Length: 318
Image 1 (cartoon, rainbow, N blue to C red):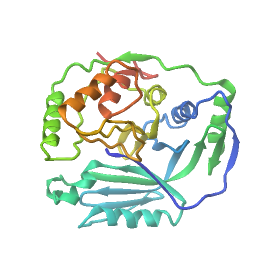
Image 2: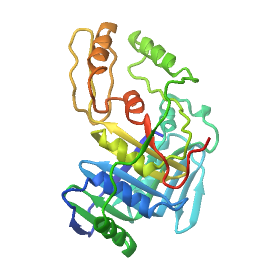
Image 3: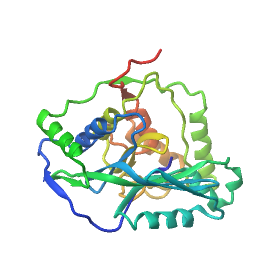
Image 4: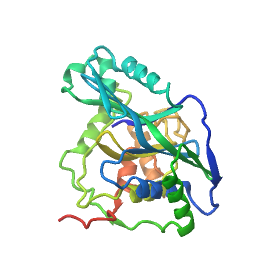
């Protein structure tokens, strides 16, 4: 999955209360998700942007775009249609229809969405998920100064007041996960990608690997713990369209080249450039011995997701 999205057109009526000064919005947002969306199959999306944490709850309408079919689900009724060509116009038209009944929609877009740009759609299996976008029934928007309820029902407001009254627990308990094992040859693939970038074959390469976690993951607690060690432009946590995920988009990137010293720069998206080997070594030597915030996916996995909280409900599996 590439990441979460939020699209808005206009503001709607809302009711707000003050945010207690001692509370971190990310902590409250994660605990609210745990309190309101803990039921298996409950769909939601938590999205952080520009100092706002939006918890979108309940699905009024959903757009499901697969590689061979578009489905629009509204009030339990599903409308299906085949499609061809590029996915962006198809998804855009479907989102436009959703925005006729709401001012904001949320969802995720898969990396496979970008395959069509390179004429590789034939490599996708039938029913490959490309995007899931939904119109929420209610939203709770949190900032450092206030909590806004947009279409929120009574038990949503009650959950917020209960957490404010009873308080939020301290830092979640974590457990180490061994990242040393490398059965997929991830480090070799990183080295190969770097060589190919330096050879001019690519400007950017995105790699990933799968790490088995020997216990059920507590997503809200993991989000809280990871968010404390990051300063992202955006972050998200979701259970939507068959996927549970959380992630962070870093606000720090380091462009560097053989002839110019590197320096941190702010970009709207995480961007990377590869430089000469001596530049890369200087960068690594500078960052390795010092405490650091999230810089890249590699650092994020090794430094922050190396410790994951246990589930609240189940013991680790053998």
